[in-house]
Image (cartoon, rainbow, N blue to C red):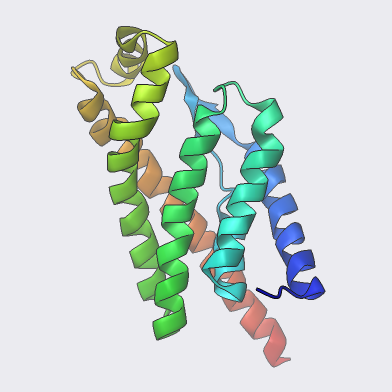
Length: 187
């Protein structure tokens, strides 16, 4: 695989913007390990610009750089990497085949939503439960929704909508930027 200096520089630029957006994000009240940020927007832009691999590299570099600043013992970064890849990989594949931002965006959002359920239930939650008592984590979710009884309900009621929200806004911001760049190129 031969990556040009221009491509490496662009990936580094997108990664640095992604790191800044990640550090500017904020944690949800009561559930401090869930974070709202739009750091996937540069990864989506990198995907539309250079393909899925570029987007994945931006997600990877961002998570490695913010790792020393984490309060989640790296579990949050693993989750963010998995969900970021589940957004940009299908979006890039679909975009390459169709050149449709809408279809690729829809594919990325649906993939990240499905991945949120599977990976959180089978990988991320068990990792958290290994270091923090399960009931302690679920009690944080119950502050927002008192009816949550188990981890699957927590994922479906809190994590899934949060993932869809973050993915959708990242895609909308990226699409807005892509359309503005196309307009600028016309002049």
